[in-house]
Length: 258
Picture 1 (cartoon, one colour):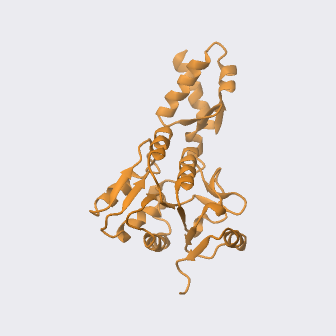
Picture 2 (spheres, rainbow, N blue to C red):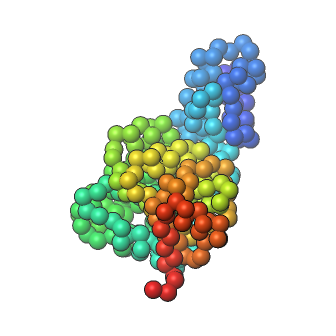
Picture 3 (cartoon, rainbow, N blue to C red):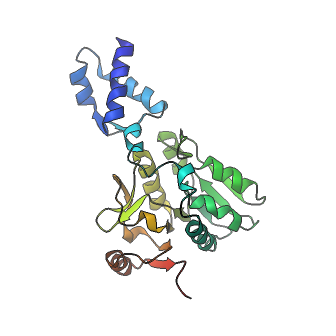
């Protein structure tokens, strides 16, 4: 019965974005609420879900709605991502704690990071190793549930770690952006972590290649009013430009004429 129940919960997490304790209670009327909560904790530890108020959000279902693996994305729009990363690196400051996102564009920043005593925080193990190889920069790697496809960590442990560190500048990459939905990602755990970073940071810099424009994924982590600078590789739709102007957000097109 124990294995059958968890197999049933696993199937739900594969097919649904959210499952409530009330729904689980209806499915398993002879099982206590505490036991069902332990089941959810089990699936959170193995990376299948994250606990939220009233139940759990599926991370497996969310991955199907993401924008692909980081290995695939690293091979897309390479020149644009390098140009965006080069400009982003110019905003690094010694003496300020800087968060580096785990997106494919941020992976391109390493060659442009000077060998100086920068202080970084990241959710990307690969980026942490590459930054560490530079020499002088220090880097704090956030721990948590590892998403192998996207080479990033998230979950409750990551959120607790994030609460203990300060962030001054945040370099973030969305999976999509639209005037209707704001800046979005396909993974709930990643959304929660990015949202916490945005709340902590003094300056939020969005790295946005054109493939993300007019694309909406399920979870919004911030709006234009929370962004200080957008670095992109092409003109934004007029609606987004109007939002940026109203919010006082600077928009930098890396390929525009000086």
